[in-house]
Image 1 (tube, rainbow, N blue to C red):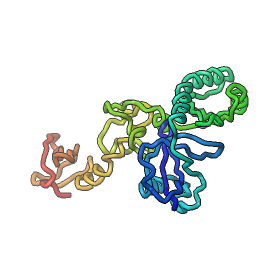
Image 2 (cartoon, helix red, strand yellow):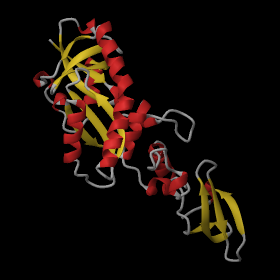
Image 3 (spheres, rainbow, N blue to C red):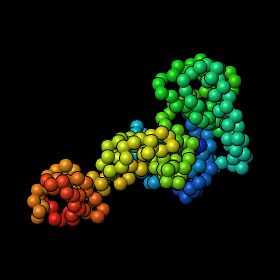
Image 4 (cartoon, one colour):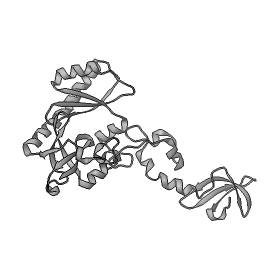
Amino acid sequence: MTFVVEVRFKGNRKAYFSWPTEDPTSLRLDDPVIVEVERGQDCGRVSALGDGALKRCSRCNGCSLSEAPATVEARVVRRATEADLRVETELRRTEDDVRRKVRDRVRDHSLPMKVSDAEWQWDRRKLTIFFTAEQRVDFRALVRDLAGVFRTRIELRQIGARDEAKRLDGIGRCGRQLCISSWLPEGRPVSLSLAKDQGLSLNPTQISGPCGRLLCCLHYEHDFYVQQRKRFPKEGKVVRTPDGLERVLAIDIFRERVTLRADDGSTRVVPLDQISS
């Protein structure tokens, strides 16, 4: 019997593995495990099991696990021991120094890129460097340089601003942990039209998160605003009221009120149910 397991690594990175066992309960959430990866082994924590892991995996684009779990070759090797966890802790401790060295090398090569994070594979067979850049970067010479410094396989991975926020975590404008790094599965594109539909400021600096992109939470209530606004006349439309024809200046979907202007320039606020289109 093959049991599907979601495993999370540093920076909210996740992957899916098989756990060949007759006893699915032999693994529990948050158990540290050693897993097979492309070039060796890595260490992570169990974050979902069985049907829950399959459901999460089905949201990933291009993941073959959701279609044919039995064909997945990567597997959980075993539970991590105390010695394994000490190795992982030591690797995490050294990664700040690694990141500083990489930044120095980037500066030496005069490359237009910002180094965000560094992550050792548990068996030290690979070192992944995460960076952001406004354009494509030719980092071939940098990779050769870093391979000589760290004596391992180097992978440079370009990520977006939202992915960087997901890896590094932080506090949002609301005073809480960033959604993208705490519970939000994937970041979705956000446009100014979402703010416009909700009557928010269109100044990007007022509706952007620490990553510099528009707030992910603009999506949360958007559907509610779209549905409610369908009940109201659009701003600028001329409507018929008991007092005659008047033009809509503004709407209040929560109090169900509409601000109107008459031909003589006077304004008033009336309940929605007093207006007919």
